[in-house]
Length: 254
Image (spheres, rainbow, N blue to C red):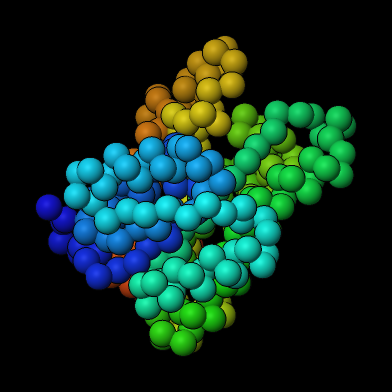
């Protein structure tokens, strides 16, 4: 049963990269709170599995294949969702990629790939949904950035990844400023290390060092990010916008 202020009955929530990892945790949170969730993901196999597993439990979850780096494809996809459901109340941008290549070994293709998904992809979906939310006079946008966008990378990726996530932070603040007069809230979350396939490649010795430097002494769970996203999209956070929330176990405490 949905908790007080967390009932999303009648709300349509779009989640990019929602098939696994943090994205799946976000989808599960909204679906369990009676929301109608649409997953946008390039990984069709994983997305269909997530959709099937959740719909079998009676949740309202569907899936559309999409490469969020393609501007016109995103526009058409968002139009399709609006045509079907009539509105989009919440947009969550979780889709993202990283790379462990040192900056000195990176080239233009690396930049275009990472920035194209992490930053341009976030722009593409926001650009498609924002006018719709303006017409409706309300909306919630939650972007998944990273503490790497504040730290310049480190264990959460190299310089290009950090730049893309710092861009997401700046974009979110701009959306909050321009969306405010239309009752559109825009916030971002900066996860630390979360137990996902993105954190799996981190060498064990590095994982131990990260945990040692984390006050809560563990990695986060995808659902722990999902619950914060759901709060920011709820009426409980109606006067919160332009904020960047660290969900990192205390790493950014200083």
